[in-house]
Image (cartoon, rainbow, N blue to C red):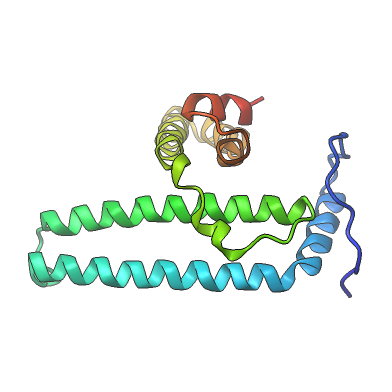
Length: 173
């Protein structure tokens, strides 16, 4: 059963206990279930419609490449655009979630409100990817450690409006 009133996040430290974290996550999910479902649906449809439109454009320019071993320039470009749009949506979803956790009732338009952070987020994503890949190249364990340690860089990008390196430094503290 969902708990009607949730405890909002405080700036005080919380216990680093798996059971506590799961309990808090469940409470917040139950309290905001409808909002999260709406967010998920809008995110899904925005992504699927964008993917369909961009795919149609690529096929119209490059032709149907399913039988060919090559990839067209338009396909590469539209795939890149779709990745950028995915980063844009994930920034908005992160902001939406932060607002829910702060006790606000965000509008669904928040999903599309983080465009000013896309370049920084793409830079941070590239640096994060390179760090984790290098960690995996050296050995499996360093890659896992880096992936976990720096995984919250996007939250720093969204909430603190940091650049790529600053957001990774903040997440890695």
